[in-house]
Image 1 (cartoon, rainbow, N blue to C red):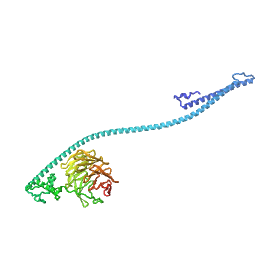
Image 2 (image 1 turned 60 degrees about the vertical axis):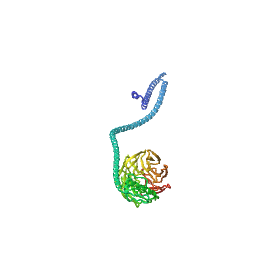
Image 3 (image 1 turned 120 degrees about the vertical axis):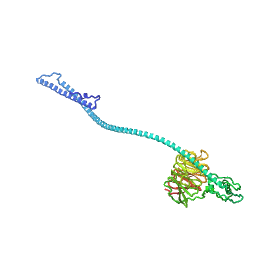
Image 4 (image 1 turned 90 degrees about the vertical axis):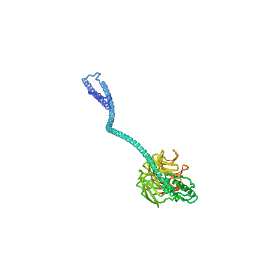
Length: 569
């Protein structure tokens, strides 16, 4: 073949299987052409050799052995036949290799097609990812711009917050200064009023003394009958003198006089009263007006039905309390009102509404005489009313959070309050000022007082005892739940506590340990202001459950006596 081989035109360092197959085919064709060429040449030589031989035979001459002899032709024929057989073997081998290489070429073409298809899919995926990358990049830029804007707004708000915080701090300092100023002014006003009242009382006493100097008193101590007809000292004046806490406690002495001052008359009258009381005689005096007889309950009857229902307040009723004589009921609600009800024949008659509290009422307490009401409210203060006055007489301010309990001490001139600001405060009601602050680790839910001891129940599941004569806590009794209420029996021997672990505990105040635990299926202490109380004779304990039912236990047996349900919603 005259053309150059195809393999020489490829510029690749490593020829592919297809090119190798093509080169093999080309060589095979070249050898086939060469074989055909040799065959034709052999036939031509054979013809040339036969022609002279036949001519010489014709002429009758004999050929000499040489190059054109039959033996040489036969040898050449055998040689060429061997080459032809060899060429045929090589051609078959090459044909087999051509088939194998054709199969390999098809496989490579299929694989190449797969790679091309995969390459196309990957190229499409790359395009999609690039588009998504561009989209995410745009979103990131938008978010970065938005974050910059938010950062600028945050900086502005932070600056405003800092300014407002400074203003709030200054306002709090100013508020504290105003409160201190208000307390000082109230103390000054109270002292001024006390001085004014003292002057008025002194003037009244001076007038009475002048009148008394003109009267005579005749006393015969050996007679069993006391004759004070000529000494007409009004009971009201004795009450006023006792209100000033100027009670003369001189023992009775025998005396006779023709002219005495009013103070001397009161002294002698008091001595006679003490003497007559010691002898067992019945004598009435002004002290009975101030200290009313306290009712004593001998037997408690269990309630079985509702005797009266009244819409007492515009919102929730948070506190109820009977007066010491049980003739008046006080209710306090979330509408910042205290309503007094007259209890007559098992029914409630509206008696009076006390206004002036600026927050929800959380606790109500009567003083021992039943003439004053002390209430705690959510306006961080406790307020004092005189029954009969429609406006608050005194406001006890100083707590920094909601006042949850307010109770009188053994006298009506002292009070104790507990608050969520983690303090318990003692108050002098004459001055309207705090005389002691007790700091506690947990906020107070309720307080009670007995003699010189203050008992407080707290959110940290502990009941603490404080001696009013000392600065520290004298006893701590842990319970298993947040304390919601405390109630002390009339004999001041036992303390009843209610806690959020749905139990009531009776504490022996002599031993300062838990004596009884009351619990029942269905009873749930549903709030931090759930109250539990003793019955007047300490035979039963009563508490309200979150489902509106009242649970009543027997103190002696420790068993659930009854459940009053269906009345409260």
